[in-house]
Image 1 (cartoon, helix red, strand yellow):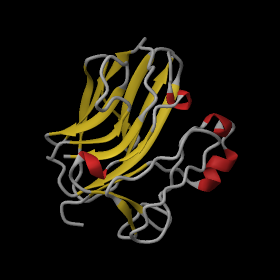
Image 2: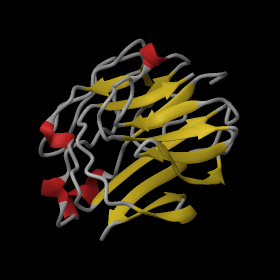
Image 3: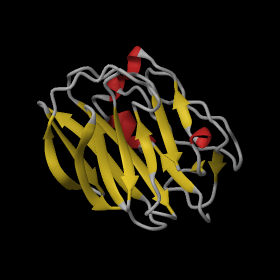
Length: 195
């Protein structure tokens, strides 16, 4: 895959069908499709479907299914969903899961962003810098930890439960827990912005 990066928000369809909270899922993109396709599908119960920039689906080394989203360097290559009340988290509990595959873990990148290019909003970003995972929220880096792997799929989870936010990589918590009373009011999502 060279210097290309892949980002994937996905979950097994079988698991989704058996999840008692599935009706609360707003974005579920398997990124299945044919090589080179720019059509993305949101199979969740609500939320808008992200649209692509210059990236497309690739059938090379998908995590599961037939393809994954191939994001090359540059913000224009990311997928994004417009600001929507469906993605405004507020102060409640939430869970976000994604998987990434990167050939250049030392490069900066933002696999998931609820804040990109918007001022005076309360959003957050999961980003990579110097081979380490970071959570940026409330105008600062709140969690740092875990090592970004080379050419290997890694599952990332961000969860807030009862006012505490934790970041997980491959099922293991990285960094410290963040006492998080933020009301996340921004509802735009960017997936796979790699610089």
